[in-house]
Image (cartoon, rainbow, N blue to C red; front, side, top):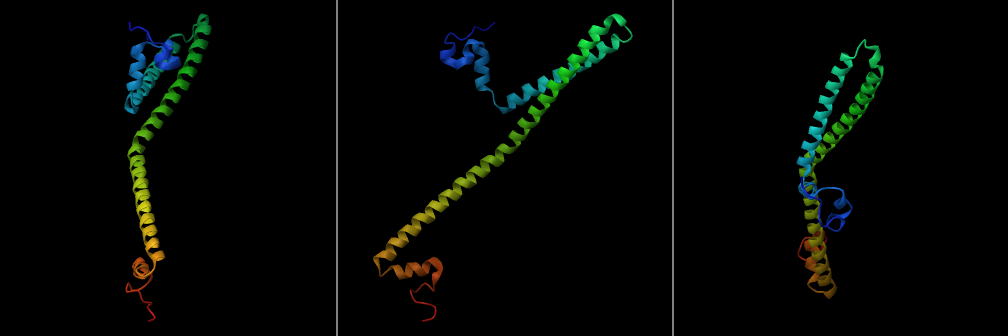
Length: 157
């Protein structure tokens, strides 16, 4: 059996005093795929438990002395069903998250690229504004921005 963390809460916060070092290390290294496998295993165990409860209920049919046992089995069935539903919801959410990660990364990179473009355009506009403020050469810059023919003259000239 693995030992509890010698560092305890100092090393792993509040959980250090409750969990073994190996369990904490595994949890820190886990990723979404690991979480998905764990949830699927939990769901599978719930389905197996439901099957066993169904067999036990069938075995106690007609036995008047097993009323309390049957009530406990029905309670257990309800609890396991609720837990299986929770696990299934977690599985669906993790799968959705895994499927969305590439989109999120692409969208984030697109946003970063667009921000860089906007910054570059802003810097260019500032530089061109400074040229315009200085005077003479600024007229052609103004036309290069798309406001005229590019030769510094109005289109009506």
